[in-house]
Image (cartoon, rainbow, N blue to C red; front, side):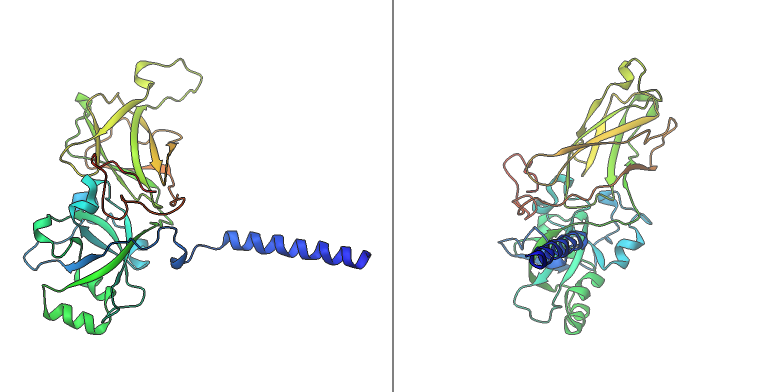
Length: 307
């Protein structure tokens, strides 16, 4: 009986180690909780007469797309209005694969959304517009040659939202040019938003050095709103004097959670065009399956969250 008991204890110990090792293993691409979306889409080449996909529409100007992202096999892409969701999709990551497998790579291509495209410029059911490099990654060599020969090439694709992973980048904010510090006008755009997340709310307050200090009007949290006509921009006309701290609501399924910067994010002399590190890391993934928001549709108010 003692030998049986010892064997049982050893079995339980090994099982515990295996469970711990499994929990520490990064998820494989096939293990993404967001499955392939039920409806098809299309992937098209950027027309030769169109402006280059430089990411400016989502705040990713020259030098702001990290090399670790492109080195990890991600490309930039533009999407139709249904996917863009008034800028809520800025920075979202998707995996695309060809339907039918004709002249296509087995694993498809991973892209990050950096811009939108008018629906009148999209073909089929609308969807994704890719650079030549991204299209070549989606297809095999035959598809690459086809892309070089035919600028109107469009392929049917399956798609799903996948986590964005930044090893060396925290969630950051870019101060938009419309901001005027002396007038309390502040407009922000978020960069390097990891995981499979949407930002649902943003608030700003004056950063205080002493947590025990009596609250002042400037240190009270003030909400920011999405700026109409400016994709992915949050703004307020009542920003207090800096330095400023931020807190945001991040959703990765039903409900959400608050994330608050430990100290000042924007210095007292913040300036338009500046990019500032919040010190926050976002890595949440969808808790179950992906709903309409990540599959390119939204509710009547356009506010459906990722779930």
